[in-house]
Image (cartoon, rainbow, N blue to C red):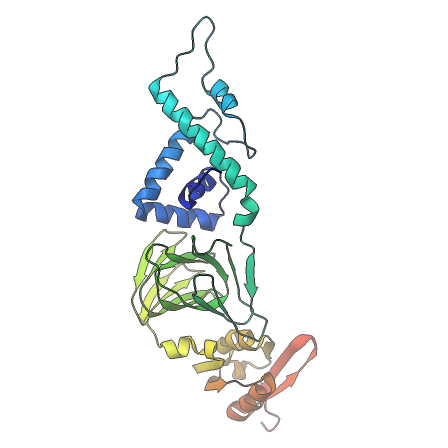
Length: 325
């Protein structure tokens, strides 16, 4: 059986346009960091450009067919394959086998691992490389079967990562708007809101914004805030105990307006709080609610904020003025 390396498979997938937009972005980053990968890619790219049909068919074709298509003799002239053409054709032979190998086993390379945290709950699990992922309520991740060889994971929502160090295989988290690359570290990513954040607790991370291609490095206790609407980028210090409190089943509200706190509350409990009064929307709330059920939280909220809360149909919970006011 032909022995095809992971790097060769990546090059083939990229040239065959079989990578997602996120995968292509990561591959381009890897090209800039890995000289060996770059050399392999340049060789395969030479074949791709030299081959008469830039989109090789997905099924394996014979070397004889490539030879006939690539070097058709002109009428009344003998076939004369130059040394350069021989090299290109030999590499084309390898590439076609790589394509065949890839497409035969493509279903194995598709990410079939999909983990989702149920609404109102946190989900903790271990990846094949021994890294730990903690998913916040309603968040999800996907990753490949061969995760040990290509440590890429796709995140929708919020998650805290404790990454096992492996200098030979960077750990990359993909979101719709940026990629976060690490070797071994602990950090939080929240892609749920307009202000998306990457918050570093330990180690070092490199963030690549997909739209602008800008790169930002973070050190411990530094946080990147990227506004998906205005595209503004802020780098600041943060308190890891506050930002990542949710992973310990703590809802932390840091003296914020009710209307600003609602998305965090709704995600944490997997419900839909609704404010029925403008005055309440601007009231501020502060507190740490640990291991409280939704009913216990409602009781606490009514007591400390002097509001009235009632459950309605369709999982809505209305917050209004206290009946005593």
